[in-house]
Image 1 (cartoon, helix red, strand yellow):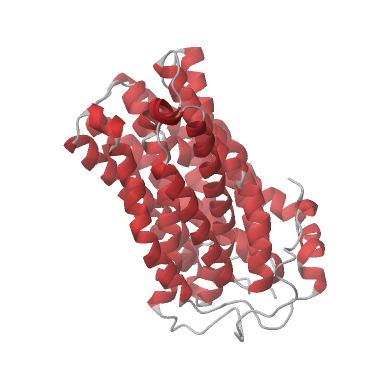
Image 2 (cartoon, rainbow, N blue to C red):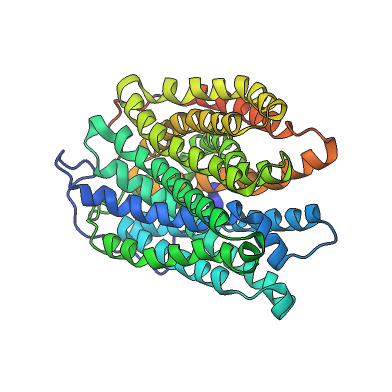
Length: 442
């Protein structure tokens, strides 16, 4: 990672954001403030991860190959393409949020995700328009990646700046909880469609329905965000704590934060792949496989909020460290059990358990990182750490584990990848300072 490669956007000159006296508002923050961030974040992640849940059908529609495995590999490779744009979105939109304000940056990400999702939902198949189809899909994934790369930093900064000091963990945990809600809704949509439609109908048009539903809800998120207050100071940040200078001063912490993000990223995208994994590797029915997504999303939603509460009560470090250690130790046995006894019970139990560990740890991580950064680079630094970690490992996880299963013939191969990433992340978490009682830096 190279923080010095980021530059503030020229379109946002030294212009004050909407006036706000402090990044630490009083306790009576309206619920609509959190709802505006959560609703938009959930819809953006819903549109992005829906691709993973329908990778089998998308692969056959846009990426014909000589074998089903080849088609799937092409599909998950394009899923990874969306991650290449994340660091760019993180730097550009994060810098925009640190100069112009959190609110305009979050409005921009909603606009970008709308464009990307619209193109993906309406692109004709390869059989209809030939090579243009996969090219359009790749471009749409890049736009979606740009949006999500710029979403997490500003939204995380907004949530902790809106929160009472004693509840920053709970407020910021809604960032990850909204991702769980996205997975839950996308999985429920997939479960409904696979139950209601024949396989031929799913392939022909059914997989497009969840994207179109997401498009219908995006105007609501846009409306909520348009009415958000601003949490960035009106006064300019100190030069040494903003822009290039601020990023250079914090490059060690940002590099450490990238390592902290890796474990949760690999675990999350292995979890998102469980539907495809259950269909292609465990040979389960699509309806049953989609159920794993629903369970994982629900577990993430619930345990992210539990993690936020725990890190307010017990501290950021223990809350993020011990669940990650548990993931390193227990993921391999959990997958071995699933492979040995592939049933609805084991699939749902393993999916829910691993999602719970990731949610508790991840919620605390997404609180600690922006808390440790000064206001002038809070959104940019968080965006860089998250986008780089997710791009390098989230964008490649599904491709890597699909390849590993094919090469080794070991259906439990994904578990070893999760365990290794969790060890690296747990060590990085030990090096992170505790931030529970730390005042937000200006």
